[in-house]
Image (tube, rainbow, N blue to C red; front, side, top):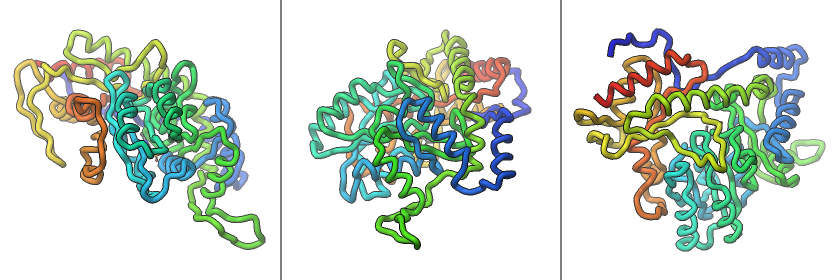
Length: 395
Ligand SMILES: *Cc1c(COP(=O)(O)O)cnc(C)c1O
C-alpha cells in the first residue's frame, strides 16, 4: 500500500450539520424556551408523525428511553418472557430487563441479518406463553415484516419495533417505525439524523401516547401539588435538542441518498473480491443504508480467534478476517467497527435461551462481517482509498 494515513480521520458515521439547526437552537435560547416544553418539540413530533405515517409521537431523551416506555406499554413485567433480536445493540433489549422481563434471543436470517421468522415461529412452539416481540432493523435494513407480523398476530403477541438505525427506510412502501404497536427511533450522534441525543416513541394508540407523555415527565397527576399514583421517569426531550433535530429533519432524504451512494460505491469496488455487502430484498424494501457492512466469503477467511476481550488472527495468503481489516483501517486513520456481537454470546446474557433454526447465523455474521467507514462526509476519493485498503488485506 502506497497511501499515507488520512490526515483527517474518516469516521464510521458522524453528525452532519447544515445550519438550520443553530437557528432553531438560537430561537429556543432567545425566547427562553430552554426546558422540556416548546415549539421545537411540538414541531418535530408533528413532522415525525407526518413522515412515518403514525398518529402519535412522543419526544424523549433517547432511543433507549423510548424503548423502555414501549416495553412497559407492551405489558412486560417481572418474569415476562420476551422474544428479542439477537444480533443487535444491547439497547434494543436492555429495557426488557429494566422491567424484570426475560429476553429470549431469536437468531437472524441471511437475507436481511434481522430476526428470522422461521426461528420466531419455532420459539412460539417452545415458549407459547410469550406475548411480546422486540425486533430491531439492523444497520438501516427493514426486517421481513410480512412474515414477522403474521406470526405475531397468529400468536396474539405485541410487536415493539426498534427503528433506531432505520429511520427513513421502507418496507413495501411503509416507513419503519410503523410496524410495531409501539416503536422507537433515535437521534443519537451517529444515527442518520441527530440531535446529539434524543429519541421518540411512535404509536397509533392515543391512550398509550398519553401514558408515555405522563410517565416521561415524572407521572404527575392533575392536582394542585405533586400528586403521584404511578412510577415516573425524567425522559422528556429538551427543547434545545429538539431544535437541532428540527433543523436535521429536512435533510433526512439527502442523508439517505449520500449513504446509498456510499453503499453502492463499496458494492462496485468489491465486485471482484470474495465479499458481499449487508443484504436486503430489493423487491420489497428500501433501506436507509445507515452503515455499509461487508461479509467475507467463508473460503476467504483466515483463522481468527476472539476471546471475550481480545482478538488475534493467523495471516494466510489470499485470505483475511475482520480483525485484520479493522486493524489496517485504523492504521490508516479510518474507523470501522465489528458487527454487533450477538446477545447470546454476551456474558450478561449467556444463560438466556437462544432459538436458532440450525446454524448459528448471528455468530457467523459476527465472525465474518464488519461495518465499513460510512460517513456521509467521506469523499469518493477517500472511499476509493478505503476500498484499496480492504483489497490489500486479501493479498
Ligand atoms: C442507537 C440504538 C439504540 C439506542 O438509541 P439511543 O438514542 O442511543 O438511546 C437502540 N437500538 C439500536 C439498534 C441502536 O442502534
